Image 1 (tube, rainbow, N blue to C red):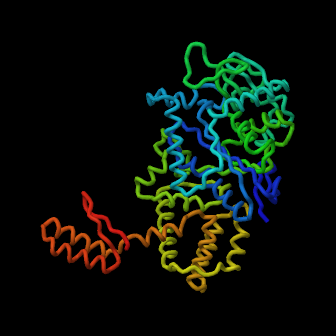
Image 2 (tube, rainbow, N blue to C red):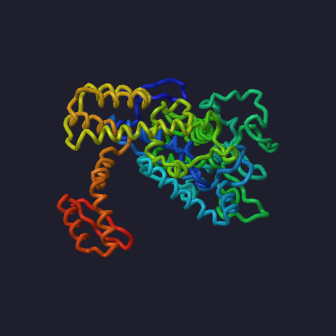
Image 3 (cartoon, one colour):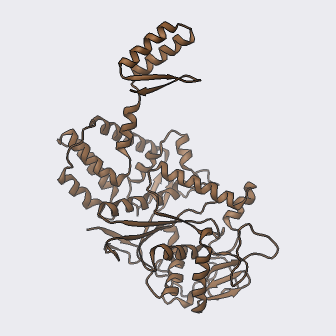
Length: 459
């Protein structure tokens, strides 16, 4: 029985899908104007664990993730410059190239972290008509109004606006959540369509019934979620920073348009802190996955590190904590490799314990503890291996694949012989080089000469 903490109710709830045969799952994806930092990536590791747990429980999952490549302004108050256009200006590239480049980089990051791709990548720029159609519905229902810079959603039209964040709207002053905009009817009103400024030509703009411009940030998730998953979906995920504005606004516009509940289960991961503080470029603690790799931490170390805390807990990143995760990860790999290649039977007692903790709101620290208990148990190695591999369907470490790669690595004695042969070739002692080659082949390896050096392959 899977239990998940629903941000909407602030309770741990038993998961009851709309359709048990197909779970509808939407994740807020990246705004592709810059490198994704490791705090961003925590949200996608969390969503990946959730998806794996759903699949482990026998569900088929239809997963959609958006790519925000237009409409996300530098301020949540719908003021400032579009983040994509700003990056294009600063990097002297087209907005389209900026979005394409950072989107490709993001996809490489999630591949390195062994995150399962969504069934559908939904780019905002490829769904402009769907967003316009949704805004039309809101217009027909009298939920939006026009001011000088765009069309805005009137939050007073939503009877329970702010229910997700439990906002206290009474007496809320303009500027408490957003910057002052004297044209807005209510402090919390937000843009669904922004007008292009007459004085400048945007790279990304479209015609609409209300004028030339571009969609607001929030409207894309509602429009694309409804297109692919229906008007009411099972699960929506994101970071807790999305609760008070982005997800609150998604609910308001979606439910006003359809008259139906938008999402049954809202799940949010907490912040990644850096040295107990907020990550920022100005503080010099803004790290990408590539930064970690450059310091000698393979991507899977960062995935392992994320699993040491429950997703709703703050996670504090330090280089000491990464060293600890690296040591644990290396220990895990070695212990798994030492089990050999024979796979036995999954141990029912351990798997039952494991299912209980992963179904208890994705309790990964406890799941890792059970994994270590398997290694310490008196089970035969082949049964330990089978059980750990079953666990790895959730952990996503790719242990079986890593073992195959490890088995393809030449042992040190073979490398030493190959180096000795290379030296003989360099010194033109070709008879000696041939003799060593024959010895290497008798030991089950082939040495292939390259323009620079050599390559060893298992026979």
